[in-house]
Length: 154
Image (cartoon, rainbow, N blue to C red):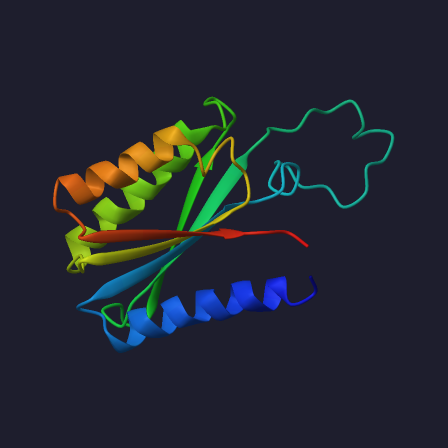
């Protein structure tokens, strides 16, 4: 049971190693959303009496890191903000993933294998819509193989 997070990290680092060592064969993408109130603006350290009636603007960040030796530093970092104008469901996750892949394809070559690592949220990341998109990426020959791994918070 205690070994599970270590095994997860081992798989992640194996995918990262492959993406760095064999950039023409694979690329690794890890993505996760930031906690809800962490990115609200303005960010106030202490809420005093004068500030308490003010409302904050809710912002949400989905961050992604794509690892490959094709990038100068071995990785590219992406961030996608929204102001809760979209539902936080699989549509948002798929849009962010596609935006990241389009940017990557504009700058670098897309290798035949895509390794994905998402958090454990079935509602957003591992559902029939996401798997349909990933299957479509293979069907359209954008990738030969897509492998998905989950991040489990323990």
